[in-house]
Amino acid sequence: MHISGIVVHARPGHAAQAHAQLAAIEGVEVHISDVECKLVVTIEKEDEQSTVDTFERLNALPGVLSATMVYHHFENDTDQ
Image (tube, rainbow, N blue to C red):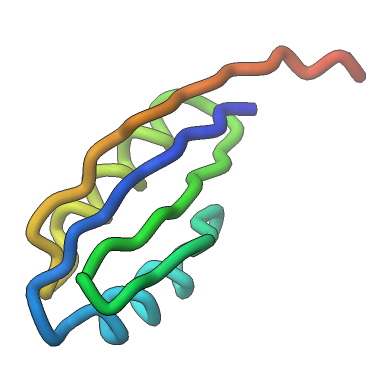
């Protein structure tokens, strides 16, 4: 499991739209959203490529100025 912490900066006036778009993506959870257009989200994915693909998708969303990864953690699946 790959867990990443992301800070997303939305265009002024687009925070609510960005929040809705982010929350609709599988494996993405919005934890904090403020009026300054900053959102704190996590990505939880099974593999590295899915994490990268999702991160790139966040950066490409309309109304998003930037998405910056500030934390990444990998855990091996111990059930196997």
